[in-house]
Structures are given as structure tokens and as C-alpha cells.
Length: 348
Image 1 (cartoon, one colour):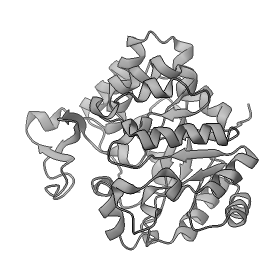
Image 2 (image 1 turned 120 degrees about the vertical axis):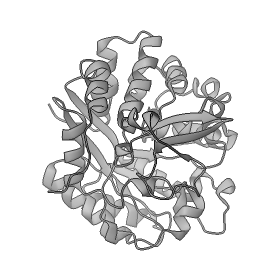
Image 3 (image 1 turned 135 degrees about the vertical axis):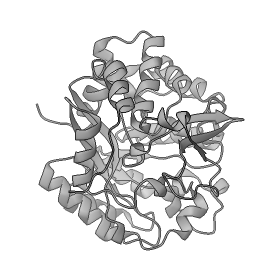
Image 4 (image 1 turned 90 degrees about the horizontal axis):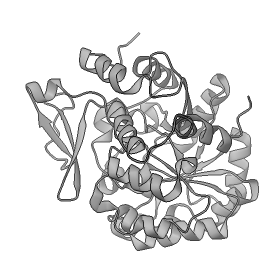
């Protein structure tokens, strides 16, 4: 069996001293990707619209890899994932979704379909029902190719006829918002509110807390989001304790969900912000040539030896935010288990 991760002393100590006793024994990870590399033959279009660094961490993530990652990173805990695929525009979306559906049934893990905006309403509905999916995830890379990344709107890759299907059946919608200004973008905020108003039965999850990875990404978003009543937010691939604190103060712990964005969180990194841009500090040479990605910076020597996993950095940032707003143990269990269990209609 291949070795996915080297667990070092720095990792064991970080987990034992900061996370193990703080986390509940049962965890639901609301945001994970599983796919085989043969589904994605080309990446040119994806790299035009998104950061390139996630592809440096893993070129595939089988369900077996996902299970092994949890075993390694969460000793003493039981973790259940909500899964969906990871696909590029030129990739084989049908095969990718079929794989997720198959391993979902095999392991009894909940799953979302990765929807394509070109599908009509009947096709989306049929695919969801046949694949036993609990809802849909889509991505800005599937928006019409004529649009620049700064022009893409939510409804360009999650069209209204898809939202009507999700609303009709009370299904989940995992939303990775587009646009350069992330959570503070007024178009994003307006469309997030529109979804909640027009489609009240959709179980809407805003991924990555709206990609507010640095304080500059927030703007007046939480003032606007104070109007919301039902939309939820996952904390996946985010290490901004300030964002987490503001989120908890605005919507409370019942609408916050733990998510990882695995396999990306297997990365050994610490994230910093400089002039409003996030930068992942990584050990020199570990992820190949990172010089073309301005979100990556190599470190070496003692600085590299101190780096632990992205997963642990995310969890510790949320722990600090939870302490700042005085969350109780029951609130932590809600964020890491109970809230997701309710959304997924999981049986006892």
C-alpha cells in the first residue's frame, strides 16, 4: 500500500496538544473530493480560471486514499465524508460522477453530483435520482468559455432551472462563489441572498466561507449576511481566524459546518496574507516548481521543519475563533457533526 503522508513529530504534537481533545469523537466532513486521474486528461482551461497550486498536492484522490487520510490525520476519531468529484472542463464528467456514485453506495458515504450548466432540468433530476445523490456541486470553470473570470456569476454555472430542481426536492447546493473580490463582491452577495429568497427549500452551503481567506476579502459581507436565515457556511481550506470569528458572530454555530476540501488539506503548509493575497508557505522542493503561482512560497531549514498539515492549520484557526466567541463544547459538536447530520438527514 502506498504511503500517502509522513506523520512527523511536529504533526503528532500539534494534534495532541491543540486538537485531539477539543474535537468530538464523531466528525462529518461536508466538503471532500474523490476522483481518478484518468477522468481529467487536460487542465489548460481550469488553470486559466483558478489557482494552480491545488493540483500540486494530488493528481487523484480515491475513496481509499480519503479513508486512509482520515486514519492518519484523525487518530481516535471517526470521520464520515460528503463526497463529490473534481473535474476539469475537458474531463469526463460522466465517469467522474459514476465513480462517486459507486463508491458512495459501496461505503455508505453521502455524495453530491457535479452538475454541468448545459444540462436541462429533466437531465439533472434524472442524474441525481439515478446516482442516489443528495444534491449538487458545480464550479465556475464550467461557465461559458467566453466569460472572463472577473465576469462569471453564480447563475452562469448554477442556472436557475437547476436551482428549481434542487428546491423542488429540498436538496443540497454546494456553492463555490466566483469573482475576484470573493465574499465582499456585491454581485456574489446579491445572488446568494436571491438564492435563499427564491429557493427556500434548497439546503445552501457556501464553501470556504465564501473564499474569504484574508481579512481584506470580507468587506461588508457579514453586515449583508446578517439578513440571512438559512444558508450555511463550510470552513474548508480556510485558515483565517478573523473570518471564522466574524462568521460565528453573524450566523452563530448552528449554520457553520466543518469541511476539509481534501485532498488539498494533505498539503504541508502554513498560510499567511500579504496585501490581501493569501500565500501558502511550503517546504522547498516538496511540490515541484511553484515559481509560477503567486499563492505559493517555499521555505527551508527550521521554517520548513515547523510546518504541519493544512488540515491542522484550518482546525486550529477555527479553534482560536471558537475560543474568542466563547463557543461551548456542544457548539463545537454542532459544527463538526450535528449540523451536517441534520442537513444530510442521517439516521441514528
